Each structure stands twice: as structure tokens, then as C-alpha cells.
Length: 479
Ligand SMILES: C[S@@+](CC[C@H](N)C(=O)[O-])C[C@H]1O[C@@H](n2cnc3c(N)ncnc32)[C@H](O)[C@@H]1O
Image (tube, rainbow, N blue to C red; front, side, top):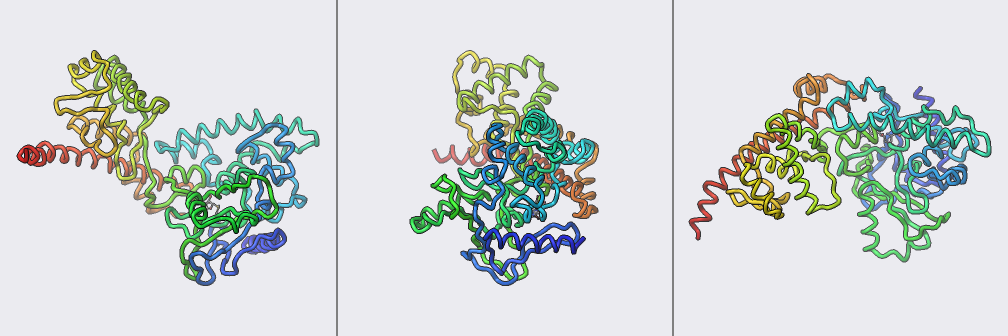
């Protein structure tokens, strides 16, 4: 098996040479024995600013560059569906495809992407996580897209296509590869598969290399500030768009080091600033201690909690008051869930909703009668002036209790296993058991955020005591 992938890697290198894809001889493409995954390592020291690879844009597998371009455009396919068809088409050509040397190195599919998991695996491994509902919806949508777009495309193609090359399995496989290996290239090519660039693994906020899109005819015109802007555009792993949107054989993608890397260490790219749910969803892996993790509390859960204490009439009227206030500030922003950040901070809108639900009847009625956009209670809080920075003002004792209850309700979504059970299971799980391992990392990272939410709520009460006591007293004494 190892010999086979080594042979495929050699064929890929020959293909790159033939395509004028150039790379530094400091790069070593390592095939990991345990999972046959490729990673890129430095053979010797590489320095910040070094140009380590150039990739002509036409060598990227995109809708525009594929032989199926006209068919796809005539059939008005767009986005992911269009690129999936281009990929399935090129695969179906076998050795006749100009990308054969590239495609033969790729795995058939990325089986770690949850879209490819069975429904039982999704229900068991993702229960309660941010991905559970999303992935189930994805699965249904993919089937609908395939039936509504791919099947008629194959049936109506002027030159006969083999339906087996475009069946549901092939479509799912193509989708998993595109989701985990495609990049935005530019306005002309759109997004597509970028050979060589897609061999680099991801590291959050600690990448070693950046991609830049350049046109050789505009290179000398580009001043340093533009270059800086391009680099910034590239931080999220996308190739920056060129000014020139026409296709040109001289257009290339460059990979430039943004930090020194010592010989023997891996060279990382970044796919963007994403939490573990987004990483697992799109790429099929997670990272320990990812600072972009979040957990959401659905509006539905907040209403459930409210209805367990108050009448449904009370819940409905408070919800509509919160909505009125919210839409007066953000007319087009629909909220279906509230984000809890990685350090356990709830977004201000959640605190406002809880605060309004808990508002004593008198304060609520006064507000409603006046139809004003401001609201005050005996502490003199003006709701429309509460923002992310001063949101702790809303942490009354009852709001704190509500947050603790909501953390418990959200926690129950994970089923019977406790966080401690998950932590133990994770310790015992080998990384090579990828689905279980990454789902456990996701579960534990989300549940730790709920723990922090509880700590935040309790610290909020301390904050209020300080405000109402010593700090406030000091302020009054100063007057
Ligand atoms: C663009 S490819 C990177 C090259 C890939 N390792 C290969 O064998 O071709 C993206 C895939 O690599 C893997 N990957 C990338 N970064 C990773 C990381 N930090 N941890 C685990 N797997 C990673 C995931 O399977 C992901 O879907």
C-alpha cells in the first residue's frame, strides 16, 4: 500500500513538472504511514518571505478550466454543484483528463467529512453538537440537489455520459473533496481544486505560508501597500482576487512563507479562523484548544425555559417586545440562536431577551404603554444602551439563574453521557479512530464552553455586588 502511494506521489511530481507547477526543493511531501495522509515538511530551514511555490491558475481544476465548462454553463449549474460536476467529469475521463496526474493522488473521497457518515453515526457521534441538525439537513439537501440537477444534467447531455460516474455516491465523494480541498482563486476562475497547495495541512492562527494571486504583467505595477492588502486578504486561506478578471496564461498563484520554519518541521497553511464545528463540518477534523470554538443556544431553548416558568402568553408577549427592540436597532437581522463565545460569554441579545422575560409586570406594562424604544428598571438600565461592552449590567441575580438553567438545558442535548465520560472516552480514543476522536473533541470543547458560561454567570453576580457596593459607594462619595 505504501509503495502504491509513493508511486502515485512520484507520478504527481512528474505531472506538476509537466504543468510548470514549481516548488522549492526545501519542501518534502511526507506520506504518513498510519492514515496515508500527506503533509508537507521542510527539508532544510525556510525563511519568512521565501517564495516556495508557483502554480499557474489554469492548472487548477475549476469549472472554467474543465472540459465540461460549456456543458455546465449551458445547463446553468453554479457553485458547489457546478464544481462537483466538473470534478466528476474529469474523473470519468481517467487518463484522458489533463488532471489525471493530480486526481490519481487524491483519495476517492474524504470519509471523515460528516456528510459521508451514516445517519446512525451522525445520531450517535454528533448528538447535541452544533453539527447534528446541520449535517442531517445537508444530507437531505445533497440528495435533492443530485436528483434535481445532476440526474437531468446527465440525461440531457448532448454527448452521452455514463450515469455511474455521476451517481449519488460519486456526487457525495466529489462534495467531500471539494469541501475539504477547494480554495477561492479569483473572479474569473471562481473556486476550485488547487494542486500542490492542497497538500498543506491547517493550523489555526499559526500558519507558515500564505497564498497570493499575481498577474505577471501587473507584478511590477503593484506597490507595497497593495501587496500588504493582498496578504491580509489571504489570511483566511483564500487566494486574493486579481484586479484583472480575464483569463491569462501568465496568471499564477504564489506561496510565500510568512514565518521561518526549521528543517524537519511541518509547513502549515491556514484554512481560516474556524471553530471545531466548522472545521469538522468542512474538513473532517478538529483541533484541541481551538480559540474560535463556540456553542449556540437556540431561541427555541430560551422559549422552552421561559414557558417552564411563565404562562405561554407571558413568553409570547415578552418575545415580541424583545423582537421589536431588536428589529428597531437591526431591521434585517433575524436571530434564531445566540452565540456563547469560547470563553463562555453569551451575546448581549440573549441577556436582553432573558432580562425582558424576567422584567416585573409593572416595568413591562410601562414600557409597552409608552411604546418608547428605551426601557428602564429601578437600577436605571436603559436597554437600548446596553452593548457587548457593558452587557454585565444585565446580570441581575435572576438573569444569572436563568443562564445557569439554560446551560443545563443545552447540556441535556448531549444525551446521558456526562462531560467527564466524554473526557475519559477521548483520552482512551486513538487519533486514528477519526470519527469518534473528532466528535469527542467537538463534544468536549462545546461542553467546556457551557461550563465557562456557568462561571461567567456566577462571576456576573460578583461583578454586580462590587458595582452596587464598593464601586458605586466610591462614586457617590466622590460627588
Ligand atoms: C487540503 S487537505 C491537506 C492535505 C491532506 N493531508 C492530504 O493528505 O492530501 C485537507 C485535509 O487534510 C487533513 N488535515 C488538514 N489539516 C489537518 C489537521 N490540522 N489535523 C488533522 N487533519 C488535517 C483533513 O483530512 C483535511 O480534510
